[in-house]
Amino acid sequence: MAALLSGFIALFTPKLLLLTFVGVAIGIIFGAIPGLSATMAICLFLPMTFGMNVNEAFVTMVALYIGGVSGGLISAILINIPGSAMSIATCYDGNPMATSGHAQRALGIGVVFSCLGTLFSVVIMIFAAPSLASVAVKLGPFEYFALTFFALVLVASVGSKDVFGGLASAFLGLAFCMVGMAPVDGAIRYDFGVTSLLQGIPLTSAAVGMFATTEILLNVVKPILPNELTQRKREKIKGFGFSIAELFGQTKNFLMSSVIGLFIGFLPGMGGSLANQVAYVAVQKSSKTPEKFGTGIMDGIVASETSNNASIGGAMIPLLALGIPGDGPTAMLLSAFTIHGLVSGPLLFKTSGNLVNLIFAAMLVSSVVMIVIEYFGIPVFSKIIEVPREMLYPIVLVICAVAAFANNRSMFDVWCLLAFGIFGFLMAKFNLPRTPFIMGFVLGNQIETNLRRALQLSRGSFGPFFTHPFSCVFLLLSFILIVNTIIRQVKAHKQIKTAV
Image 1: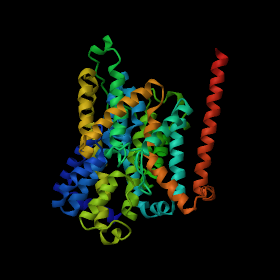
Image 2 (image 1 turned 90 degrees about the horizontal axis):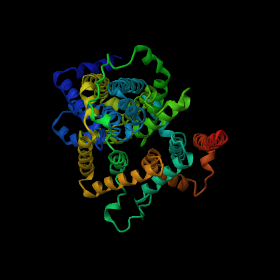
Image 3 (image 1 turned 90 degrees about the vertical axis):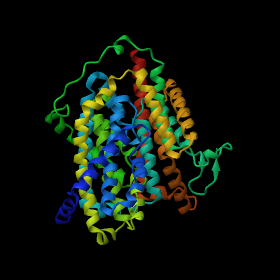
Image 4 (image 1 turned 180 degrees about the vertical axis):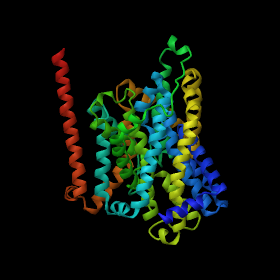
């Protein structure tokens, strides 16, 4: 505790506190704009840290990280377009709550549990970083393949009304992920002679196109109803829009989502984009009223925003303790360590213990700053929903296009954005869920890489997948989940036929 106190003492200087406030505010803006993210915020501001000392640089990076992850809830709730893949599940209940006239309440729930999820994970990180990181080191390609496959099956089967449609959508996403250079041997696949496809389809363009552009297309074909032309009555809330009783009523969901986010976060290569989906489905499965999910209930927002922010502390564990980034933003932080002549890993705690304690303190303070900034911003943010859609959607589309172009400075990314928007529109018309597609696309590289590495280690044998305990458990869970979902769906179909 004395060491952590020294970190707070070092942080509480006018310049570092100013950098914390500015970093969190800019991170929130980057997180709220569809197509931008915490990763891009850190990437763009990384060169600016060259002229800073080590303390100033890492306080700024940490503030951008925490603000960027939380900011994604704003666009997810208000316009049903996630700021990044980390906030996809927030759309499911956040936007229905906002469109029913409770935008400020939805934002308040998201803001509070974003802060609590971050604080929970940072506290665990401070006291358990070395022991938790040692678990991740012991996991090999067999375990990582089983875990990612289970996560994909979980989202595709439980998160979709039609298990066959969900699985088809997920494996379609896997197929699109295989375009370009193979991750293990570098073989070129399905590029059709297009040079821009050698590096694969850009994730940012695919994800933003599938949600933002598709959402715009789905809405522009709908007629504008008379009640949309009238001024919506502004909601007046006290505090964050919910009571203390409601806060404590979410204790189970909060703890479950926090643990899921923390666990998935500290597994290298996973991150909040997977954590928010898995936590949402897990909370839905454990709920007494799972049918209410997707209609605008508090539980769904709590699950998504707690888990994706809890993944922050989880992702920092392997970065600091092992020198292995847990997700995109921590990969940028690893670059910052290199730029400033530091080596992250076990020796960092001995050689730069003061910096580690400063990072811990900066994460805790940034979480508090984040909730303060977003609390006072709730009335301002909520006005977005009052903007007529014929004015809002063109602006959003332009912002998405600019963000896609900025990702690689290529018009190819913009064309991909539009192409995936049209493709998502067609999927919606044929009742194919889009979320499993994006999850397949996001996890495809991890699944293929770990499968091929595992088969190389086993000389082509699938036996070790079932002799490694961790791998065997998750593969069996995947199989049981698919079979159980099919049985439930068949029974539900029979009941509908009997009723008719």
